[in-house]
Image (tube, rainbow, N blue to C red; front, side, top):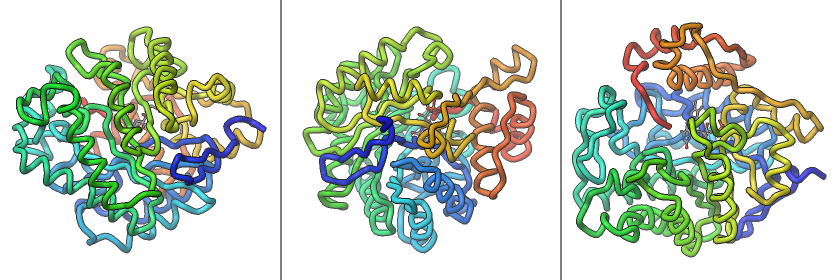
Length: 403
Ligand SMILES: Cc1cc2nc3c(=O)[nH]c(=O)nc-3n(C[C@H](O)[C@H](O)[C@H](O)COP(=O)(O)O)c2cc1C
């Protein structure tokens, strides 16, 4: 039997049927009241039928006053409980674990959505992103405590409606990551300075969620292996955070950042070895399952990563936007590699400017097609997604974003 087909038991006894882990992809399909709808149900039904052991939702926001992008789902009270129940029901068919990723964008809330976003400290985004995000203000200690409760409240509702786990989004520069990073967090109170202080927000979120959902309910965390900036959150700190979280009872850690197969394409640096070394160090340090996400494209490399014990599960995002049946196909013996080539307009300068944004739209367009019951449409021409972007979101959409 292939390694990827083997079940995996979480430390709390919950059994995952195989090693495919569908990583979060923001659906941007909610209406202007940020409610989930039929599209979410069809999309997650398709993924559940596709065979992955765990399916993580796109980031769901814990506060309707702080959105990461238009079309985010918000769960900060029980107003949409009926729709959420249906979403959970459709997404858990075929013995699929459906975990809700919960998030707060902090200062990564675009200008069009936040006049004055909040952050650990009033440190604006870097030059490249300045045009898209207003400078943030620092949170008060009372506000930090209120936000911790919001994460716990979202998790409580996720459990109540039938999601089988939650994942705290601690990666990609959002609020939890901002607290961890010494670049973004310049506080001199209990939430800043030493690593113990910078991780306090995450620890309090975890503890309050655990109190709300009880033992035995999976709580996962997505974390960067580092901020990849000299003055940012380091690899050593990331290892320490995971160690601490594991000792508190975290059920699974997903590591993002770095790219398993093609690091040069995604980061521009030779970080493959660096990233694998990190994953290995992590596996030596903690007993909880580790999921490496980023760049898995061929069944061979998935199998080899599991065999070498670099990871316990295979985190996959973009290939599952192109082919929701991918896990079933691989388990049925398909050896086909799924390529996620860079889109191009044919104009190098324009490609450089819009590349990452248009790339994300292309995948979001595929999610929409699956949600509408249509097949996905693979191409490498960037003009279609670019046009789609401008007609649906206007010029805001061309501003840089991060995931
Ligand atoms: C359209 C799109 C939306 C994404 N949304 C999220 C998100 O909401 N939360 C998150 O943690 N990562 C998000 N990601 C990042 C993916 O989970 C994953 O870490 C990244 O795409 C690398 O994996 P891959 O090479 O298999 O695509 C998103 C990626 C894409 C392409």
